[in-house]
Length: 370
Image (tube, rainbow, N blue to C red; front, side, top):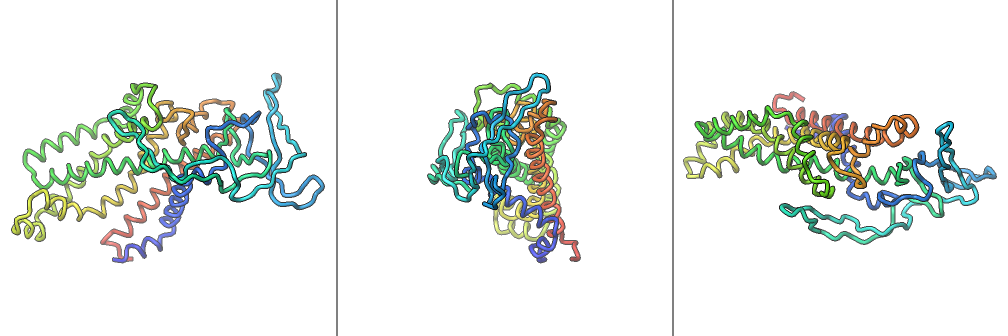
């Protein structure tokens, strides 16, 4: 079956895959794509709306895309509004590959237990060029600034690293555990099957979101965002493998009586080798589809925890804690640019994974007549 061709012929699955590729490439190269440091504040730039891009100068002549230095005046006590102050004396052209803050592209560090100290795996490539920026005092805030005068677009890109990769790391932890437990339970049967399946049933009765809230609430406030990221992954993975184990067990029960398994037994293969090398690879189709559909669950869990203040903490960004400002009614009314971008990115990411998962399920279905 030409599953790859079928996947390419599915427009919805293709759309989801392309969108995910764009998102992951953007957040991996966030230091290069983001115009500004996500932790740096701009002078008098709190809660600025998205920057207005001009194409003509004040004389009406076309000079190309440019912006002007913009600040926000203090809040009017009577009306509650703040007026924008635009300095038209200093036009700042928008250019590609603009020189800016120095950064380490592709730097990789990981908090490792039990001390959770940050271990640098790759120091990165030192660069000072950014994909998009301005030449002059004007700032290009594509999605405005937050209450700390930090560029919202840059924070979305860096926050995507946590929100997007927590799902991938989660399935790397939970799926091997579910595959091994399900494989052992289905292959050996008997009391081993009974004990493991009772454990799985207990885990499946635990309400996931309440467990996440309870465990996250007792985490010490001194933990860094990297340490919280790792703990959230471990917590979500702990409760996320039980459903997979039950399905893998059912598939192994039917596979262990097949001729190739009997042949491996006759040749003297150990049970562990038969499970790992012969039985579990036959479940690869289901595992690939399940992994694709499971990633959105991890992303939503992190977003919910960060939204209620129990996940990634400020000033470190994630899509969840960027949404936490939605609890402020005045932000919802007066600064909606702080709410819609992270919410839309979460929706598009979850939708893209679901579309890709549905496409893979259709393409890998042996009963498909396409």
